[in-house]
Length: 145
Image (cartoon, rainbow, N blue to C red):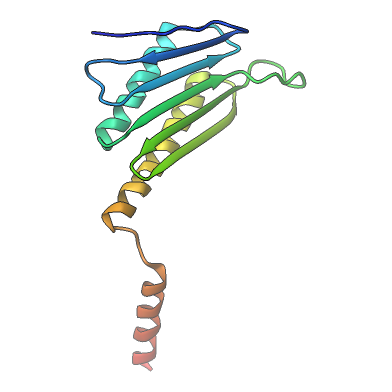
């Protein structure tokens, strides 16, 4: 596996730019205020690959995982932000305050997939026109009277 990393460590910030032969999209992973983990990085890469399998025209993907500084909570709270560049648009997902980083990633990537599905349906013209459906229902009801 050909992997290129650019690690910046300054004030607990880790910024990873990854290029892999198996991925077409440039992936940027930023980990803030927490320890960098190969397992976490691998998990993010795998989740990103699944998005690309669903829609292969993704231009870019940036994932930020952080532990915000909140003193009134006991235990760690993880925030995940995913920015996905697609032709003509950008999909942004924020998932805040999960106590397990993997749950936060799961929820964020599930939300990203749903938004990506909506985007794909929109560009393919598969978006439901609720107004047309209501009018058809009104016409049907009026014709029955």
